[in-house]
Image (cartoon, rainbow, N blue to C red):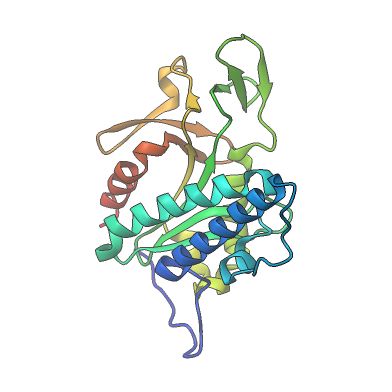
Length: 241
């Protein structure tokens, strides 16, 4: 447990929880409309109004993946709020980070714990951790060839933690809270992408009743499937209640 300083009376947190969820929906709907318009020979985007959600989030991701990304973020944000609202959860989606992909979800349980969540999909492929090279590799299920995953999500997650230490004032945190609060870095693989089942036993850790791939690359990052997110957050949070 850490000491939390009182922010100034006029302090405002970045968009989070229900307000951010609504912005994600706006951004998703806008990107979907633009994609449909672009695919129609007789349609244009000149009459499409930019919603608030798009203005805040819309430039964070490449256009071809933005619609799917916003849909995934919307789904996980809604699930987290439904499950943990009574625990005082704060969910901050699409947190911009200089010279890096945005933090998909920064989840905060004030005075308890933080989680950085990266949502990734590589299609119908398996993810393999190369211990010798300390890199993630992507393997097509119909081939044996492995390709290094760039940029590495594990390195990005480590960079997010460093970023928070330097930008803690955005969330009204003291230096002690930002640095000392227990933090989980989580890579969420979205179906049909899955982690290979061939990893060595020592790469797994127990979190509650869960046996989870825990990869030590600039710290420890947990690799879970999309359907395991709520169970993982429950187990992680239980450690710090």
